[in-house]
Figure 1 (cartoon, rainbow, N blue to C red):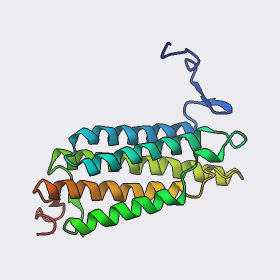
Figure 2 (tube, rainbow, N blue to C red):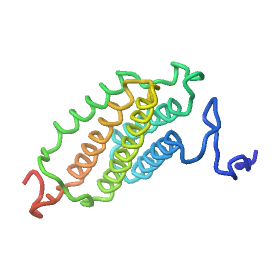
Figure 3 (tube, rainbow, N blue to C red):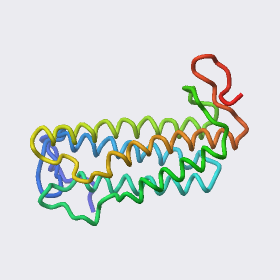
Amino acid sequence: MRLYSGRGDRGQTDLLGARVGKTDPRIEAMGALDEASSAIGLARPAVASERVRLALVETQRDLYKVMAELAFTTEQHPARVEIGEDRIAWLEAETDALTAEAPPVREFVLPGETTAGAALDWARVMARRAERRVVAVAEAGEAAGDLGVRNPHVLPYLNRLSSLLFALARWEEHEAGAAAIVAKTGEHAGA
């Protein structure tokens, strides 16, 4: 099997049900989601905890589903690929559990106290970018009289994902005996 087809050589690619330009907002959003998943994948081998590693795999699988949702045209969209409200609840429960186990952080922090923490913060940044791209798809769709993003759980999921990644970064640092440095003062968070 070849990894290339040449079909995209003129700047177009396939959605599931239509051919669009590679700068189409849905393609941009799927690319940003892929970047977020790849950043999460980069963080996985850096983390020390199997608990965190498994949570990261779950988020990557969820992002794959969100990409699938965006890849289908309205006419082709099957309900089986949708992120459900249960996934938002899972993100919230994981975030709450992690923040209960590590000292609270009430200020902006500088990423980089540990390799794992920095990798998780990079994944958080990429998740935020993906969220903005998906919001742009939703807004463009609404302006055109379309649903843009059909599933009402996608945007809340992406919003909570960055909170989980922040909590995972702080938890990994805490478990490694490191405390994040507060951005404003240079002191350590939770000190």
